Image (tube, rainbow, N blue to C red; front, top):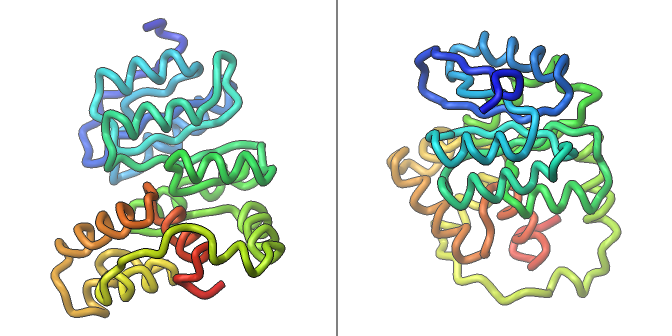
Length: 228
């Protein structure tokens, strides 16, 4: 892999991060921010989809932070590839694109967070920490777009989709997810083991045919399982 395309780092840490950003100055600045993160290690910083795909195929990646508009493709393809090889890995989009279709496509692809580039330099590490704590960090501009989209849907649309067969416990957990609680907070509130929460959440994802927290809440509201 060309040296200029991927900057490698050898720091040992828990979360293994892949950064994908085609703008070299921005990529280097983000890499410096991530290098200062005490909970993770930046495995590679790539400027193209091809380089990112090669890293995903050869390295164990826990967190992908990607732009969408890349010179040889779309960052969503990197998310799809990561989820194919590591279903439990997390992904977050950092992009100037903020139209409804792009945001929804990113969430459906498996992105659990979406930052608009007008704020990412300040918020990146806070957003990453929030994501890994069980939240879904979304820039206020993106959140407003999603709220407007949901508010504009017709009532009958909420009834679409097959009914879920969520258990009472899964409904409790889904409600806590919608409120933004972390796995640990959910375990404390429901007085259950911290290790059983991810098991229930995986069952929720399977029953709702989704891949992450944002999708689960969105789909549950679309079906009328959760109030809007």
